[in-house]
Image (cartoon, rainbow, N blue to C red):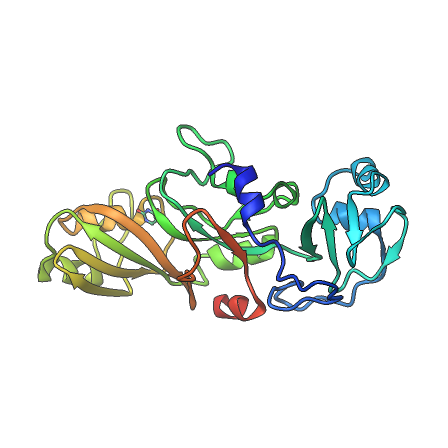
Length: 270
Ligand code: URA
């Protein structure tokens, strides 16, 4: 799926016609933002990733920006951004001080902005979010699917990835060979990986079928799960991340799609 496709098929706001406020999406920092002063429309657009000052002014002057369903032509219009819904070229957006979203990463996408051999997950996000410097929270391998968070809030990204926080990640794994009791015990007791000072342990390990495993880990290291399973004497064939902390990949979010995180979602990551 190309970026333009994702832009069109993804709901950018829980929009109700003529609503002046929105709900169901986190509009402010999870740490709780201070009240926001009225801002010029052009500044609001800039803060939301619609380009430079000149580009945002031009958007408004060209009649491409609407408020409450009505085009506006004054880029200097002062507006209270809190809870603001606006549209650009008919696409509805809610003002957000920060970006927090969950993607269902499909297989065949790299998490890098400069991918080597496959398309980047960033092509699945709309351009304004990229211009806001929205970044993936950690990385998944190109063949791994599942829950991938994105944000433009550096502190949030740090909190989610800091080893000290030890945020739990849950993976559903298909293995090449039937799992043995010894392999499960090794994963829980600790496996020695090349280049690591001490054995690394899973925090939970549940066999779901002969070749199916659910594994929880708190570390975030390169190819961690694949290396752990290999060190236990098996091999990962398929890998899917189903949860981070208390946040589970929404069952109705198809591969390649994303959605805003709600305040309740963010609580589940706290
Ligand atoms: N561990 C891996 O080996 N790969 C991933 O993509 C994530 C965790």
